[in-house]
Image (cartoon, rainbow, N blue to C red; front, top):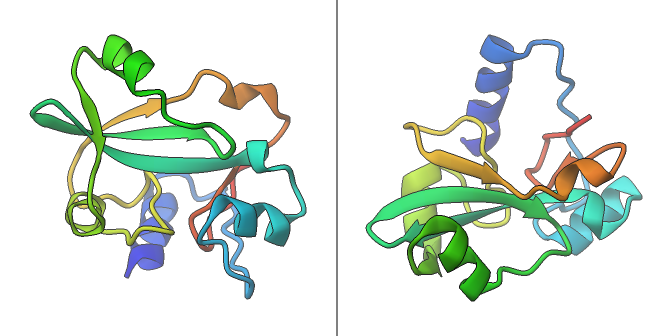
Length: 131
């Protein structure tokens, strides 16, 4: 269902975006980078977080690691990764295919500032491709 909600989102909001579907797995940053033939830093991964008493998604470069102290300073609350079940409940996407598109309900989305360093960024979501 996840890829269908992403396709519906782009059909309604950005019909000029091309969605590529791969036969190879893109469920991890390393697999996505290998499937697309790009560096891991060009993969955009989406982390589902609890920020105190609220939830948010953080889109970060594939090679980035979450620094809890910096995240707490930036978001004003302790950060914690959501469990796979909580992630699915929030996003409608399973871990390994989480993306900020086709969500069942609005959620705050933050993007890591370093993402624009690359000429192109690719989402690890199976079937989705950035440009």
